[in-house]
Length: 448
Ligand code: NDP
Ligand code: 2IT
Image (spheres, protein in one colour):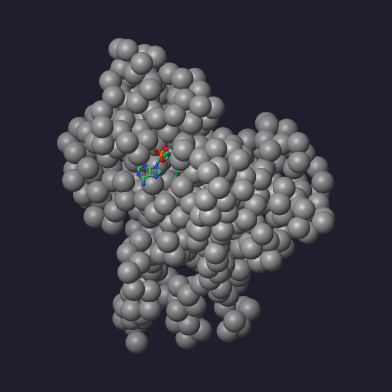
């Protein structure tokens, strides 16, 4: 069997074995199709069933999360943790709390995490988890109750050398704090390396809050710099207004770019003179309100319903930082018609396979999520290092390590692309560079 036939057969099996999980199929398809040239050079990986093993999680945990809301009503949510691959380190990846979470979403995110974590150059395997719990409109007390119940089951599956969760959509510092408090109470030990994204006083790392957004801009900057471009004076659209979007916007503004639009799941704001980030931070990080409130404070700006309509705003650089499949083929075509030159993915898999193809066929510089948003998990790994050493690095130290890591991810991804005959195709380059380390580790550890 040749490499192409092998890949097709593995993909067919994935679809058959994981019915009704289109996001997982999509993530797998994008990765394994680009591995054909690697498998041609390494027939021993086919022999050792590396791909069949890579696409099958080592362990999938699904559990009941019962809690009582402020009205005294019993509420049941579902919790998930997929421990996907531990070839190069303990499982590592975020927790997502959003009503759309089901096993297919957790598997897609966990699968992406394997190669992303490998690209960071740090010793972390791939995992992901979450719940269909919706934090919107819940009181702090309800969020705490939910987090405590969630951890009461999860604690038995995780640990600083086993599996280290962090945040993702709907999970930020507040949730990590409640989760850690309950873990510590159950274990009766101060094992702060069990979670990352912690607050600073109990072992959090400086820069972790900013890391995904800053890292995205560092990576995108490397990509556009190679073609003689910079952020200075560019019109930029950033979707989302959560953790990743806010700190991507902050770094773009520092580099002299003009971010003119941001969004949430209801709609988007357009402020042609530049988004006032302080207002967005106050509304989103402090008051947890809708982004539509922005126009009341800045009446010269506009609010439009429909989050994906944000891609109709003309820009030279687009940074999708909200959620999966938020840019489809039609949106990609509109962006191109309006003159987009570069796309940097902050969210996980924000472009559909068709949209990615449209960007690449039209010469748009394209930074794929597993490379460009790896700064968050990389800084999580730096948080784990500091916890192990019982030391605390300064903001400048961590930020400079983050910058080096993102620059290196760009370098290894573009070199792998070129080496395997896909010059400038960072999708293929990132997949190959991430895969090689994991495959080598799996191969050397035998059939496990
Ligand atoms: P947050 O919860 O902080 O923010 C999410 C933002 O995206 C909000 O503005 C939210 O709007 C919007 N959003 C969420 N779901 C949807 C949806 N279904 N449709 C439209 N808009 C939506 O999450 P993060 O900023 O942490 O995560 C954003 C993306 O970045 C995700 O894809 C995540 O996986 C990825 N990521 C996050 C990392 C991290 O370190 N946090 C690291 C790497 C990737 P609303 O408030 O209305 O729901
Ligand atoms: O998608 C991601 O990389 C994250 N949500 C961050 C994971 C982490 O462990 O910091």
